Image (cartoon, rainbow, N blue to C red; front, side, top):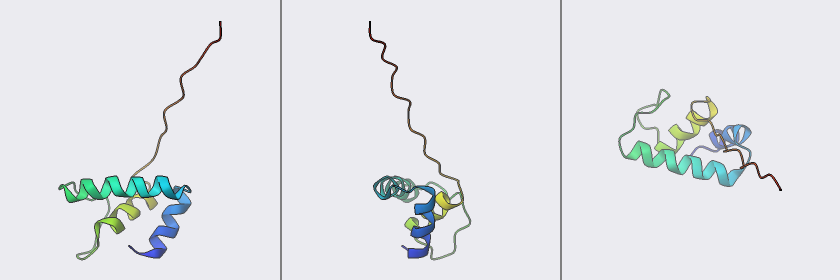
Length: 72
């Protein structure tokens, strides 16, 4: 994993634990045969590909809205 890619990805996803989970899930997908969403070099590792996808905005995060609770 390239440190400059990690630094750039942390600008998009500032929470390091969330970023690790996102990269881990994407690496599993790539290992299972999913195609990269970015141009990857011949010897580029899956983690670097996943980081590049985050940097380029190909992978985005969305969190569900918490349920609305109305007190009666």
